[in-house]
Image (cartoon, rainbow, N blue to C red; front, top):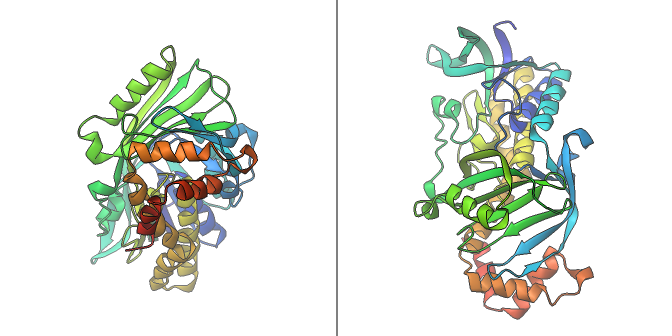
Length: 388
């Protein structure tokens, strides 16, 4: 390591490593600073992704795929369930290995990676940000860079230091909890989703298989609902009922920003990507692929800015993100609001309608169309998606 780079990326998650990879591939001298001891640890999500999303960035490898899934099961509040086919293939990842591989791809392009490097402040000269102040192996170090990419998670500290308001409104924050359970029976190729106010009000509970006898079991619910009963409490009650003899290998809890993209993702020579920029699908709460897309666009734009010598070019990042995915997230945000208002009776009706569809036509689109046909009042709910 030296003390002068074109670009410093703070955070080595999927968004940060992807940003570094594409910035380095674009000709920039890049450094990644990761506060944890190891890239990919601790794991903070359900680890499910689509094949179509992954292959944009990396060839699927069995060493970081815990399960390949082709179906998903929706379980209604009344206990009835429907098993539609996925439109494609999905994977449940081993994030520790997957994140490590993404960091290796960045390193292969020339990016340097340092772990146990805590960025505690931005370096400023004459009122301008010219680098970061970091603690590496208990030693304070100042490192200069022309551009800073903040990939440091929800409500980014680095973004805030740069003057970007990364606060997520409480109405858009999901309270989430997850356990990795072993010694249970699960179907290796099926993602399960449980709905209903008694399970996860305003959200859903997931069971994502990681082999025959292991799964990530978690849920997300609105912060308002969590004030009455915590996400961990809802999750523990479900596990006690469904998997009373399970062995718990890990347990995590935290917040997920199910919001529109942060209003500001560029400020001067600092950009934010991934969860820091609220680049999470507001409906599903999934942020791995969308964060990597944001990281790719951010890294490419940053490298172009360096090579052209024009820091103002960073503003292109915001335009490109909204053209690629941001506009869809705005629609998903409205869909989230409509779905969150569904009562248990509506969810039960949707399941009952879906069960009347022949199995070969039982896709997500088919279920949606049948739900509208059998419950015309839902058209009003769907209409809300397109009315601002």
